[in-house]
Image (cartoon, rainbow, N blue to C red):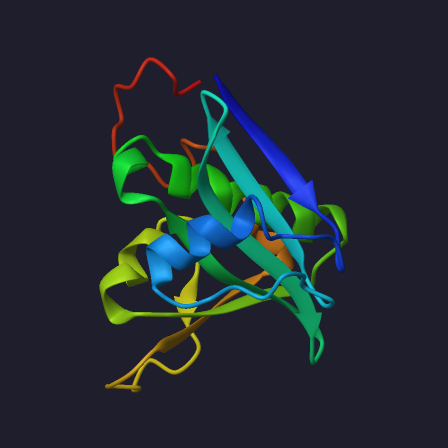
Length: 151
């Protein structure tokens, strides 16, 4: 069974979110996050994926989105991203932004994120999504035209 759990700003992340972040990103996670909401996705009662969202400089920012290697390929990263976008949408976000490694650009662009600076070449890529273009519809950007899920 897949479940999601939110951790409010300031809540203890030590037992659940921190081990996922440490394993995925190889860096320690602080015991709490005073600024952001943290989403944690469980698969069969095991923490499997996490991500965070926070407000800064007039936009919602996403970060630390990752899935433990043992749980990859099950669309848990996609689910985590959608949970974060739902949080932004439910707070009337005007814009959602993130920094991502170049190899993950396609993952975020599937849900409508675009490069903030198309000419940027090296390093992390800053991407944005206007709040009025947030779509949680799984089929919105899907190329499959004859899919039984499409209405």
